[in-house]
Each structure stands twice: as C-alpha cells, then as structure tokens.
Image (cartoon, rainbow, N blue to C red; front, side, top):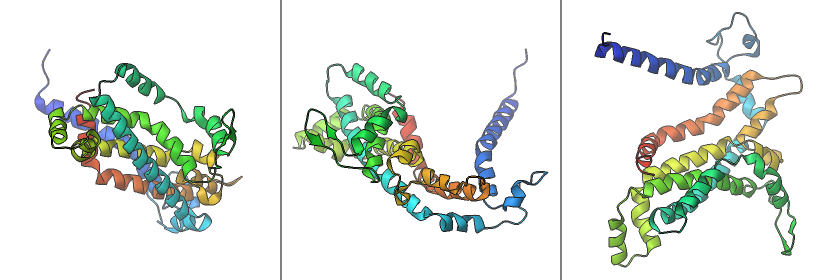
Length: 288
C-alpha cells in the first residue's frame, strides 16, 4: 500500500478544516443575513441567501418594541456579578485543593464533578421557595424576597458555575511551583496574601478562562431567568428575545436582529481574551 505524500495529507486536512469552519459559521452567517431581510423575502421561493434590499429597520424595531437596552444591561450586571463572585470563591477553593493536604481530596474532587452535572431544573423549585421570602422551618429565620432582583440570578449562577471554575483553577494552580509561595511567606506574607500576590497573577490565563466560561453560561441561561425575574424591566437578553414572538406571528427577521445584538458582547469578549483563553485551556489540561 502506497503512503500518501505530505502534500496530499495537508490538502485533505485543510479541506476538512474548511468544511468544519463553514459548518460551524454557517448558522451565525445565516442569522446575520436574515436580520437584514424584509419579512416578505424570508418566505420567498427560491430561497435568497443574500438580502435583495438590506435594511436596518429590524434593528430599530428591536429597541422600539421592547426595552432591549435594559435587557442588555440586566444580562451584563448579572453575568459580571456572577463571574466576579464565582472566580473569587473558585480561586479560594481551587487553591485549597491544590496546596493543602485535605483528607479525602479525591472524594471532594469527585463530588465537585458530580455536582457540575446537576441541571438547573433541579434547583428551580427549592430556589423559588427560598427567594420568595419564606420562613425557614425550625430556625425562625425569614429570607428576604429576592424575586425580580439581580441577586435572584447571581446566586444560582454562582452555584451552577462554581464546580467547573474550581476544577479549572485547581488544575492551573498545580502547575505553579510552591517555592514561589514559600519564598513569599518567608518574607512575611500570609498564605492568602501569597495566593493573591503571587499565584493569582501567574494564573491569569486560567482565571480568565474560568471567568469567560462563567460569564457565557450566565449570559445564555434562560430557565432561571424566566422563572425568578418576571418583571419586564428585569428580564435578561435570552428571555427578552421571546417577547418579540406574537400569538399568530413569528417575526424571524426582528428576532434574528435581536439575537445578533445579544451575541455581540460575547463575541467581543471572546475575541478580546482569545489568547488568554487558549493558553488557559491548554495549560490547565497539562496536569489534573
């Protein structure tokens, strides 16, 4: 059997990569092109891929029909708050698992992996009963009513993303030599100070990677946002997009424009931190 030449192997590899890229980008390209079309063009046969008369009216209606700017603000506040809190707690937990000799460390890591698999649906009813402002049986403590507040989403988003963020930072902290922290503690720094002054700056790619994952997951979450924040002005982007659908009408062009506007912050964020994300994913997977 003859061996393939290097040129042929590279050719097939490049063709496969091109097909993979086209398959991955086609839905996004189709979405963007649809957002510039008129409603009549969407039902025309044969299908037109490029808009005959591109228009920005769909984007104008996105902000005129609903307070979409407020939806963007709500998503940003909730996602950023959940990211900052989650990364902070994940750094503390990951550092403890990576450095301290904790009994049952492997069991703890196994439990973290298991809890990361729990769907948000499992938490829906218990969290709603907690956030509605009820008295905790046996303790005589009443919880505040958190419905239609940012905290109603930040708290569960932190809980759902904390396991994966902890696993990422635990793997990353294990790559940093302990001698650096020992030297800092000899100079009078505490272990917590060594974490934030020495380990955290060296783990910036891992911190960014964990933060991006938490931010994206929080930005895209739908079920909890739909249940806990029922006020129009507290809706997030995924829930707000559903308001453009009528009982008998489905304005695909306007919805496509709303989705396009909603994913722009995520794309900009990922492009800005892409080098950190790549280095964080590759470095964090070296040692677990």
